[in-house]
Length: 470
Image 1 (cartoon, rainbow, N blue to C red):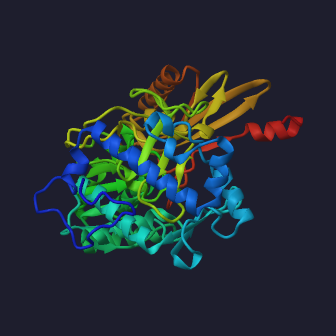
Image 2 (cartoon, rainbow, N blue to C red):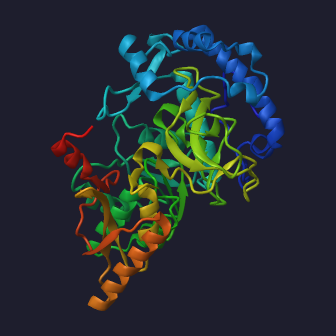
Image 3 (cartoon, one colour):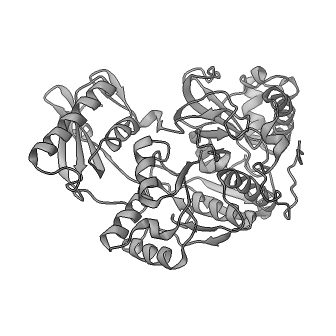
């Protein structure tokens, strides 16, 4: 395979010939069984490296009775215990600042990123110089597969902070040779400035979150600008479900006149675009020669067959600083065997990452995912662009209400609005298996977000507090 080595080394000047579909044709189109055989060898190399350099892994594997040299098949690799985010936070608390899973000397760290820490101790990401170059190469590969070329200008419309998404998208654009426009986002009032800049600079590619792309289009229209005037031909996203939800994807593509691509796994797994769609738009590909992805049963952590649903577990195949080996994501997806219509033979996530296991809520015995509700209401004719999900308790019964904005331009009169409300109610009942009270709201009833949308309000927590329930 092209430049398949450990540690990874790439020619920083390499670009595919003009007109070539694949960045690395052999690696991307090879027989999956041949690739898996090479991955098994690489897994042993990565594990041996981590065992020798990281007390975290040495302690964990010794305790589980795992012998690196005994990993001879992918089935053997399933016996390696998963790593959780809680373990990473504990390791960093005990061995600050990067934890005892940092496999390079601390003085060799050249970039520090991390989580926000809004739900506990923030996690610090320490990235070495060689890894920074490897991340750039991987992201450039995936962006090339979407159709992004050196002649493009990439507008990065997401926050520049500790958040890895913006920086890694910027890094990929620079490695690919495209013009990078690191605009950023997240500041109130900044969206109109983004409209003005995009109108002036005409970037051909946009990166951000689906929520922000929709907000940007709304602000443009409010100010008399057709988003199609920007000339954006490709929009790629990460950070939240949405780009793989048909209704939301169609909204964005109609607004901008460009093609939408989904991408993204976890910041810890950067290069996070190792889950990324290609020009075929057939779902996110698992770029297995960059990050080895297994979709597993959440209870047993055993790989589920193709066609099955589970949670991704990720293993770096090219990182030397803080390599993650069987990191449990807690996300929810379904996978299928390749190949993709683009010729790449990687497994496919046809619906992308469509939720988190811990984001689900239970209503009268039925598990409900916010992304399912979003998919339904966003696909309704007359949908006004935003909605809120309210979970509450009425006496001893859990209740579900969905407030859905409607577009008055598409629905003329009270009868049309009521028909929209009933259609939403029926569609939700059919899909969820429980009834939901739908309230139709005028467009712009809800706050728009400069980064990620927050749509779920669970009022049962207040009820539990009042009655003293756990």
